[in-house]
Image (cartoon, rainbow, N blue to C red):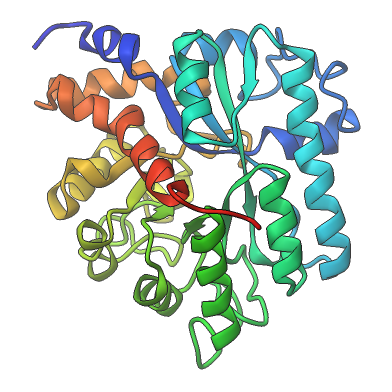
Length: 338
């Protein structure tokens, strides 16, 4: 295997990562001011421009996270403020980033050497129980919505929420249908296993797990069980394996390493096939990351580790961006917010 196979892969298929919490860090630490954040060199974050370039990132779903215990009306305001933060990052660095709410825009940005920037709402609480708010978020550029965050919504059960006797309610199914109609990807990270199945029963478009790993490898409720993974080929969706240590190794298992993430990727490929696997690092979403994957510059190390284990250039191209872009295109094709 070519020692630097990752260079060949990233030259045509840069990383399209499923989840990065930079926008919330900018809100909390820099007053939502991307200029004050100094993203041209910001070592106190996991993400800055030089390290995005070094990591071969060509497209990013930026999370527009709002805490799930906030009042829904306040969350609906804050999520729009978070969209604004991402747009101002793009405006502050137009030679680096491009605002690209469509799959066609992602392709154009990558071809121009800019980092395609899309937004995903992390938690259905952000629509405050309103399909109208969902539609307006789509008009504002929303690319995906995670149906829950750490808490239940009134219409969807979270993996870590209080026990309830449902996955999706009928209104929850209506949310999924409206997401399908308007071209918003249904993101099933954070949701309860019952919610995963209910959403897969309801959706007519591919789904996304923007930042989850495999429950068969690490038994954590935030990870995806094989019984759900096995449904992804029929749906066309993608599991974007995350690097969050708590989801990668069991408590008490010691330090987390790049090899632990590889185990999740190899299990996912075995269960669903390489056409349904991607990467969702969750950088700037937790304090520490596995050894070897400390920040956004480290994707090449992961690709090389997979190449050393026999992943082909075609496999790696699917992983880095081919699958994510396909799912985005299929979610948006023929949709309308009118």
